[in-house]
Image 1 (cartoon, rainbow, N blue to C red):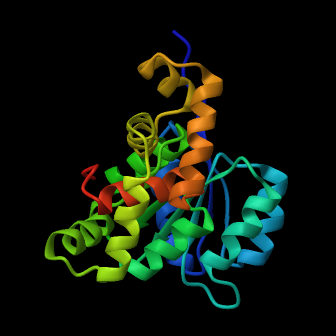
Image 2 (cartoon, one colour):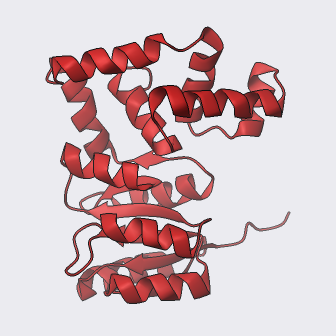
Length: 224
């Protein structure tokens, strides 16, 4: 049986001790290969373009250029890379900004090391990952009704516009299923699946799997 190739990781964090800790942790695990680490996000963008890692662990708060601002630049330099935001900020606004910028995952620096492994493996497989600490923020907001009435009505209107089939595709996408997996699950063609995905992106104003998962969590359609 062939061994799965190691997931190639690059770390971007302005704190030297944090980088050393993660490099040491991942360096002991044969499932991962740390290609490098840098504290300067602008310099990191150039190196990421050259080394082409599978996943980038990106700090959200760095002097000069924040992780949120660096993220689209990293995507432009290496479109296929998966990005996990790594931060102490678990507030709702930071999470939304990161996901809208194109993050594939959001992980608290206070998380257990095992969760780091899970996050890296999940995004590498094309799934999104939200730390339970972060996802809980949205669940609490949904349960206690703290979302603004206008915003809640707006979201409900978007979801009500979906056809039954679009709702099925939406939930499967939010769970991290690929187009091929969805087509197989719903017994539809790949082309039809892609068309449903395009319609969902337009109707829900969600342009990534991470955003769809976030919306599904908010509306109680998926529990993190």
